Image 1 (cartoon, chains in turn red, orange):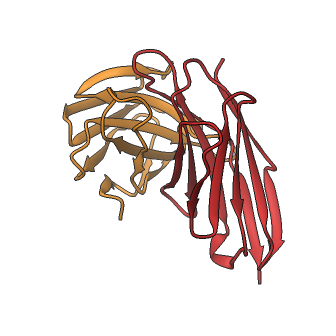
Image 2 (cartoon, one colour):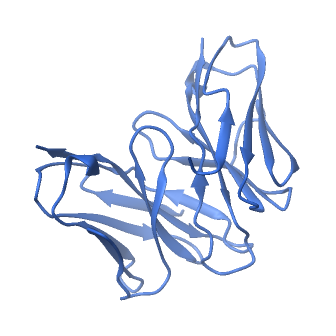
Length: 113
Length: 116
């Protein structure tokens, strides 16, 4: 059965700290791994990773995928209170052009001033 | 604004009611999805439509009935729901499925459903 595991499930840090969020997965016919940020309602897209070892970067956020060990990390440097959210990891796979998206439970990040 | 809209934003219904959730995307995408997000559980993929054709039904009870009349609109028809169906229902769209790894999803704001 396809599954995505995220750790930690919850994290509290202070502004300026650096955090690393983890995502491990098992999926049939892996296509891509995606990171989302969910603050109140709709998850918003952060990164999509398809190749191992290539870091994706956007401002203070960066992510990398290891397809051999089946995991990804999301790094946030110099955290700010606006980074407080649930960070979701999802993996796309399955048969039939990979139309199955499996989400992890999310990591709830709280950044204190 | 992600270009995906959902109505209504909140819905309270009784177990014997029939209601529908609506999703519309203005992004020119060809694939649309329904997800259920319950408290303390991961997002659960319910249905996938690719070019108006349903391609995934993840063992969803028949009291949920999707409809995709065109690639811009997606409905979720609800009837005789149970209290445990109360959740946030999210719609998403993505460009297409033919290309490997080119499908980030854009989510709507969701409909918060409460079944009494």
